[in-house]
Image (cartoon, rainbow over all chains, first blue to last red; front, side):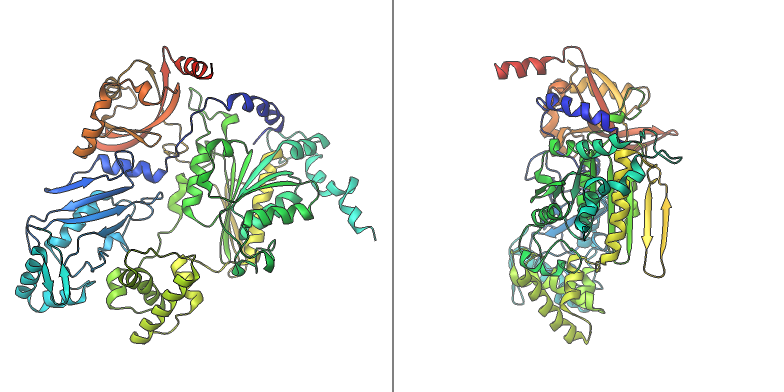
Length: 183
Length: 452
C-alpha cells in the first residue's frame, strides 16, 4: 500500500537525495547463480576455461577440452558458452569453435548433447555441461547424428572412423571437407 | 445531446468516487475516503507501464480511465501490421512508428487531463533513478527476461531495518499481467511482502526444445522442419550472419527452407505463420484475454494507490479456453530469495581488508560460510575458482572491503561458499547486507572536494 500523503513529502526529499548515488549495474539472478557455478567449478584434467571479456563478465566464456582417452586423444577443442540472464531457467548456448569430424557435432559447431536442449534442468550446472562435452569425445555416439557421414562411418567401420578422426585432427581432408589441425 | 459533457465536470468521476469517497469493510489499512483522495491520486500517483503491446495498450487506457493522470510508458518496438487486430490504439498509418509514442498520444487525445510520457527504448537503457520515480510499475510484457529485469530493479529499492522487516517507504509495488491465447494471469508484487518474480520463477514451464539430432536426422513434425531451417540450415548457408527474427526476409528464408524439408520427409503443415510462431515462440494473442487481464491489473494499481480495497493476494489465473475459470492463489515469498529477501546483516569496520572479512564470515554466528567467492554489483571481488579467476582477484584480498565496494556506506554483496547444514557440508549462495562502521563520511568529503 502506498500512502499518497507520504508520496508528497517524498517527492521533496527525493530531489535532495538524487545526487551522490552511484550508478548501479543491475545484476540478474542468472548472473548470481552463474557466479556460484563458476566459483565451484571442478574441471576435468586438461580442461581450461578463459574469460575473454575479463574477470567481471562471466556470462561469456570459453572452455578448451583435451580428451585424455579415446579417438580424440591429443586434440584440443574450443567451445564458447553464452549464458542468458534467466539462467538456469534456460540452458547456456554452447558452440564448438574447432572444426571437428564428429558424429554429434556438425561442421558449423552445433552440438547434439541432450542436456543442452531437451533434457536441460535448472539443477544442472556448468560443470555438468563440461563433463557432458568431455563425454562426447570419449564416447561419440552414432545414434544421435548431426554429422551424418561421420555417424555412418562410426557405426559401420570403426577402424575407418579412427583413421578419419586422426586425419582431421592432424589437419587434412576427410572426403570433401578440410579440417584445420587441432593437435 | 450533451454526451460529451457527461464525462466532464462533476459527473466525470462519479464511478471512481463510489470507490474513493465512501468508507467500506474490506478496505486497505491506510484508506482515507474522501474527495481529497481522488485529488491526491490525480496529483501524485505516478505509474510506469512497461510494454505498449497487447496488454500495454489496454493498461494505458484502463489506468487513464481509472483516474491516474501521471503515466509513462516504455517500449522498444515499432508498430507492425499484425499488431492491429488487438493493439487497438494503433491504425494502419501508424505502422512503423514507435508503439510507446503512438499509444501515449492516442490515450491523451481521448482522455482529457491525463499526461503520458512515452519512452521509445529498451528497459535496460534507463538508469535506476528513472524507475525509482514511480509509485507503481505495471508490467505488460511477454518475456521472462524482461520481467526478471524489472523485478530486480524494483527489488533493488527495497531496504530492510535491523530486524529484517521491510521498510515500507522503500517498497516499489508492481502489478504484472501476462496472457497466452485464452489464458492469463494478473499478480501483485509488493517486494518484501509478497513473492517477487524470482521467488516463483519455477512457475514457468520449461521451454520445449527439440534435440538437434532429431531436427537433423528424423524430423516428424512441421515444427521440426522449421527449427531445422532456423537452427541448422541458417548457419550452414549464412555462416557468421546471425538470424534476426524481426527481419521479414530472414523469416521468409526460414519458411521456404522449412517447406523444402517438409516436402522431402512428406510432412505437412508448414505455414508462414507457424514458422513465425515456432521461431519467435509466439502463441496467438486474444484481444479479450488482454482486456480482462489488464482490467484486473489496473484495478490492483488503483487499490495499491488509494487503499479503497485490500489487494489481490496475490496471483490470479484466468482460463477462458473452455468455459471460464478464474482462481486466486496466495503464493509465499522465499525468505532466502537473492533478489527480494533480507539477506544477512553484517557490520564491518571500514578499514577491514577483504582477507579479514573472509575470516569474519567463517566465524559469523548465524552465517558461518567458508571458502567464499564474492560479487558486488557485477564486480567479482574474489573468486575461489577457477584458478585463472582466483589469480585475477587475489590482489583484492589485501585491500579494504570499503574501498572495493566503492566507499558506499551500506550495500549488498552476494557470497558463494561452503556452509554446514545438519553436520553436512554443502554449498550455498547468500545475500549479505554490509553496513560499514567507522570513518565512512569520506564519500561526502570527496563529493564536496569534487564540487569545490
